[in-house]
Image 1 (tube, one colour):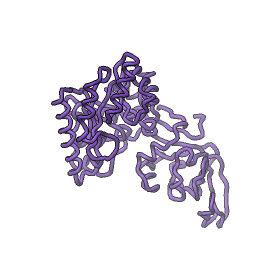
Image 2 (cartoon, rainbow, N blue to C red):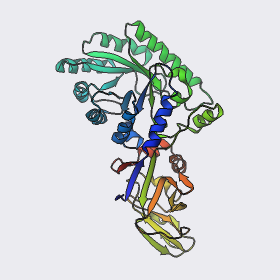
Image 3 (tube, rainbow, N blue to C red):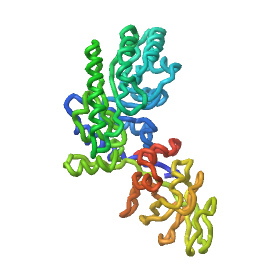
Image 4 (tube, rainbow, N blue to C red):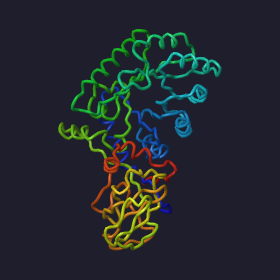
Length: 378
């Protein structure tokens, strides 16, 4: 491997997760692989190839540019943009049969204009706001959007969606229950207005795993597909009720030793002199930093694995470098492999561990890994 810092994607683990999660689906529900944020840091194109071989039914991304990259390799796949789309990009979506998330009548009017201009149909999924206070049409404004759809001849309402705000908290499902009930009411209203959208979806990873009644006709699986539990409580609930599901992390993050030096006690390490060696130590410099996605919040608190031994990060993480204490490692050589996320010997460093030490969540740890780093499929 001729990289100084890189990501390894375990195809077997990713395939295992997809197959296992598909096995949980209710009858009639289909599987949408969520690939936004560079496939949660794993590499969008690489993950898409593997997911396609697993015969997933749809792909979801954040924006039209991501969708166009997928369309180039998946000419007939259902591709849905979950995020906001500029009106100037409507033609790109329409000409490539990319489905868009819509929630305002003005969007429908603009899509009708773009569709008529290109003599093609705009496929839309109407997103209903049920409790996240993010994008979505409020239920009381639902008929305004439906009226605009009804007045359009180049807009097809093929999907209806919403998103849960707190379904990962299995200790209290009352808010999620209210969201789901409201969503079902809105779906019923849409159907009573004469529309029969094929894709009705609200399930994220946690709902897919724990609440089969929410599967409807499509589930959107993100974090769990990559082998990461949506929350500790979701994993605990799975274990408590003997749900037949084991997830395997598909990503490892590695770098190399750039330099090793012996330094005396009292030596300050890195910017700001925030950490001073308490004893004579061997210090390794690693060519990875916060530009690569190794959070600055991990300064002096994270560990890495060198020859299967946990080694503490010393001082502040720099833009392109960090230092670690390798005093306990018998022999350390330049260009030796170092594990930032993954297994080495009997130890494992997980995205969840780094998240806890940085005061964030595993989603952020993974998605902030620089997309320019090489992704190697194994």
